[in-house]
Image (cartoon, rainbow, N blue to C red):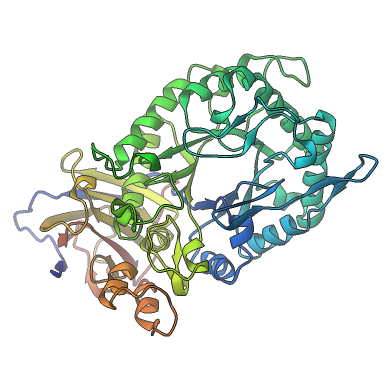
Length: 545
């Protein structure tokens, strides 16, 4: 395996002929706040995994590293078993007289574990409890991504509304109204699977859900539909913007955020020709199409937009044993894809005035709970509570600073990208070198020249650099170098712990010139990234409001 060189030099620009910069970072040109919209994750089995030792470890790690702010899961109202793992819990039953019996104990326990670590729930009021499910055969089971839940309206609308009201009131009683107002509430997950003839039933479910939740507290945030097809989203948006509300009889239904799902490719397309490589461009195009669609409905102008499920491939339980192409869910391709995606979504927000308010990665701790190393599932944690590279990527992004500053790129497109942020006395740069079509372990390096302007003149900095490549901060390659053990039993985990600790790989000091300019020259390997933290050793850098 070749070592990808990492050479870093920063020097004064004192009259020498300047080389054309790959990037110019205008540190005095503030684009806006770093909203950290990507700090979210979820899992089909989160109510199960969150209370297991690996889940408790990851929740604590998320809190300590500030890598995530929100968690989302299905099955808040019902329980089933899929691939040997329990999903959700039963919150509703009835006594012999048909009176409701509520049990929110597990919901409360899981959400308390979130809140303890500074994480907020995204609550789905799904799926229907058995006692509220209609007794009929012509209801849709599943959709083209393999969901197997029954998509149907309740057999008793009042009991279902009362369940949502009781659940909401329970959260306020348990966590306090100010805390719960920071959460998000949805009624269903991926209703695309509903029979088209019953879409009106789903619209009624949404209207009843909004009424139930907001009747408990009008400042709670409700939205949806958490779908993945535009052909479903369009009529839903038309209903909430122009349709007749099934509860009030008036025009329109409140929606505080619009949620949608995008994956790099469907899990059903793996191992078949033609080969389909996940591309960030697919996400960018989808978001721009969604902007155009939403703009057709003036009442929805300015409504926050959530991508509250994403991943490189949609299927959560397939592994590299049967689908070798899923190696990117093990390797640093995943965090590099994440960096490029975050950068692209910020650019869409800046250029087209359509910001993404939340980006939620679908994966958690299944590999760790099963004590399986790097089997290719889309998890954040693998055996031995080892962070997969995607979690390392989230922890690198967490070190970006509150204000985004302008980056001018030498040429449009290409494999190189740079995000730049600042605080009162620091600057954080995240450089990535990634092209999806390269596949794994591409050969070659690229020269990168970064010009910094707008700094205080003659000011001293300390620079700490954190590299993510095949030799640094890469738990997957470290595991391979250990002989690829199958489980964490009877092995020394210290090399993996060290690789997952996000270690500084280079440190030095420099001083700006009379113009307040500096330059960073780098040779960076392909499929690699570098986080650089520049900290002043003197007075603070002013931030323009």
